[in-house]
Length: 199
Image (tube, rainbow, N blue to C red; front, side):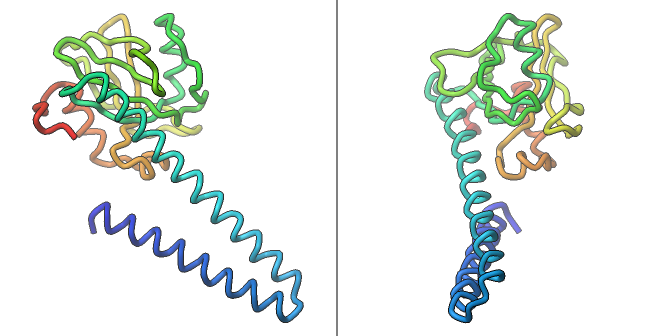
């Protein structure tokens, strides 16, 4: 089952749960079962909140990567989420960590240029800092994300660094289940993927 089919299945399941909840709520209200109706209202509110948060998260990651791609046309852009290490890395570089969550999870994009890796955040006019591309400068390894260790990508040049959880599939990445996306991000950041293969 590919990612698109999984997304359709997930959305279908949410819609079915919402419809069943609405029908059950209507029946409970008609029968005067206000306690049961309160439970169904609470479930519907939770579904709406979860849907809104996931939709916003996906939009913000895609927006950050698209903005960086517009600023650096033709370059490979790796979308991701910050890790808990990133605010400290930013401060060490003398760069801003404004808007980044302390435990990770903020959208970030890394642009691969011929000589550097540019760290982009939000819809800013330029990268927050750059990491020089060096042989063996990009590796995979654990990083703290949401209070636990997850697979992540580390890029460093001896002086500067960037650590991210790749978010080609933002909803899976938000849960820390990145799978093969780490290997893909490592390959793209190393420059092993030609620009013609960029999204």
